[in-house]
Image (tube, rainbow, N blue to C red; front, side):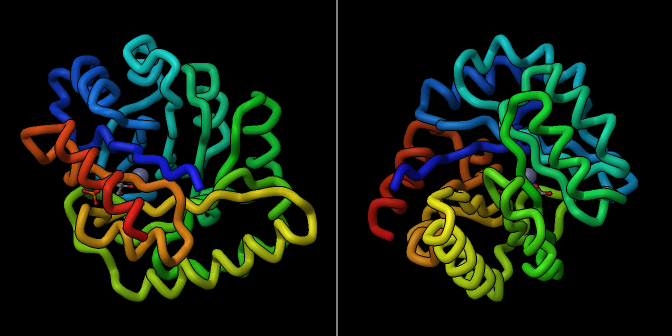
Length: 225
Ligand code: DX5
Ligand code: ZN
């Protein structure tokens, strides 16, 4: 299994975002996670597609993983795809037509994912599995970095892993599970054991002084899972 660490720039120094992205990539980041908040779908406000476009050259070949916490989503899908996103996740509650929004992402020739809040049930995935490249499971309520991992989400990861395994068995198509919120070097091995493959880490990377040590600790944790 190829585990991936996706540092979230939500916890980076906003006055030096380009440099911060280069630093975590040098330190071993696999993806860069962009938390896009609109003070409507979530009670916080971050950045839009213009900032993504400005930062794209700093990410180079490293994939930009855009997590839209905005409502509505369709216009932002197009804007972020054109700004250099490689994968876009949105929350099903934020789209009137989930299937259409997923298609809009694929029409831009990039990967599509749904992001599920802690209380959002897995059955919302049932009719769109064929359009998903990844599923983002929130393990905190979206809106802020630095929150505590919600323990009940471990069982949700395990249940989702079974669904994805059954789907892969039937179709040959692998759908990766990304976990977002409260991931750190102490709990990451448990999450690997539960079936997650991609790990967003905000405070566990940008909140540390030594990014190399922080990312290594997360990668070491993955190997113990
Ligand atoms: C929360 C965001 C997360 C957040 C994670 O709404 O989606 O990506 O940045 O931060 P940590 O890793 O500090 O919980
Ligand atoms: Zn996120």
